[in-house]
Length: 238
Length: 215
Image (cartoon, rainbow over all chains, first blue to last red):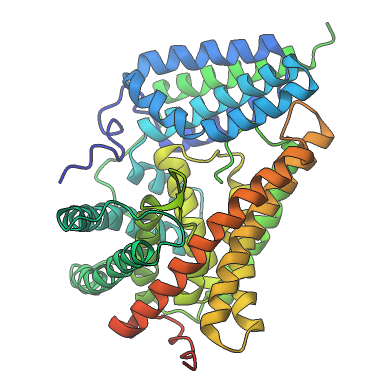
């Protein structure tokens, strides 16, 4: 089975920068956007995001798909905002959209192991780094299992159950979930044993040896400048 | 229920992050030493399994579907402290791998689903004598409480500045109403999965298996 839906574009992106810098400066940018409620500031943020997304080489439909996942909340909030006037609603919509674009950009252009090595540099507790690494590994295996089970259910005529009190439907879904855990558990014990035998000691080792270069500084500089300008437009007394 | 960036007032997001970090720090402190190194892959499998389980939709009726949050299930299998770490792991991956849930709102998402969801699920099973009923009530309450916390955060954000969040008049009934129904699905599936696992693979329960319900 193919897993094109999980970090599909991260491995060959044009935004191949130091993951630490990417994490920190995306966070700063999102903070600046989250504070801002000025039209011009948000427009500047959106223009910047659109430019970076265009450079990144991530296909537009992928970005839109990820963006659409955040829509229920944004839509609900924007609709509710209409009670306080359309300006309030549009500002809220614009702000949330720019912020979501920034996080989608980070997520779809950074390989997960790079984020983990950044976490390790930032002294995130070891148990979390390990948990994240193992979970990431297992997601692919387990989603394969889930896919096979979904096919088997379908082949036997199961179409997803009727409603929440449909005892049979919910029972099938429950035992599918239970089965995922059972298979996962057995596999996990084997994986851990073989990791131990190969000298696993809990630390993440990546093949890439990164050095922070001028490109990384340039990336950081762009994000810092745009974040600062957003804050400047927001808080400048016009 | 994954809150995106920019929706909540920054003060609410910051306060949520502080409380969430406190909760996680407590969980880490309690768990260090109690759970040995070789249990980490097992915990990660639970988080991987829950991650996949969240992708499986169950029918709510009328063509809509919902999906598991999993705090109650993690709690029943691994205990409340490990469950907090498991849920946090899932939320971090959803944020950084899929962009599902914001990075500045991560604190709030962790607070709602990993901390509040888990603690409430756990207290449900403590207050009830029969463990199956406890898990059932705990699971429903955990979804309801997480939704309530989310609605409250939306309402507070809106009260501070009307261009953030959703007014309480809309957020509270919408979130609680929808999740009261989702919670029924969560509760039914959690109990069914726990009894299935007790039957098929009891060694999966890290904290020892919960007491058998007197049938």
